[in-house]
Length: 154
Image (cartoon, rainbow, N blue to C red; front, side):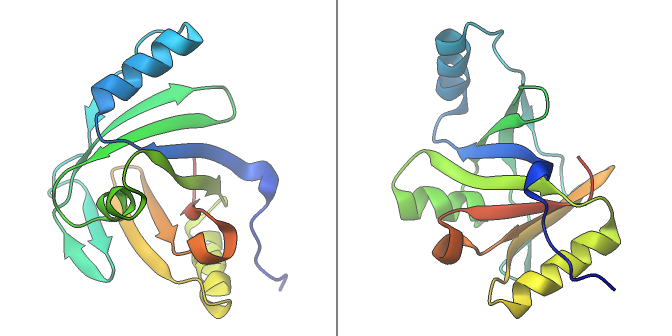
């Protein structure tokens, strides 16, 4: 079996955590001359299961996506519940790049990559399952300067 890895060519997302998503979305639309991105809410607990630092969470967030072709800029405004997004705002005292998202092709590949990262001392911080997909944020800030989001599919 090949050693699991993350292919850099599979970068699909650059995600920023913001204090005010309406303000951030408006700024992106004005600076880049694009249509104001639609602001959505993460689905409720009945549709979206979220875990933060090993505990089930009812956190929700507002999200706006800006499609750049192969890569999406994702803006996320967290609620007041504990989450990786809220932790980021508190630790960094404001807006900034929260994570880089990579697709790895399947749930099995995701699990293998997560295991490989854990073997290198990079544990899981926050993960969630939603209709049609999942995401896993790993604690890679110390090693890489940014959190990674490992997604089975785009």
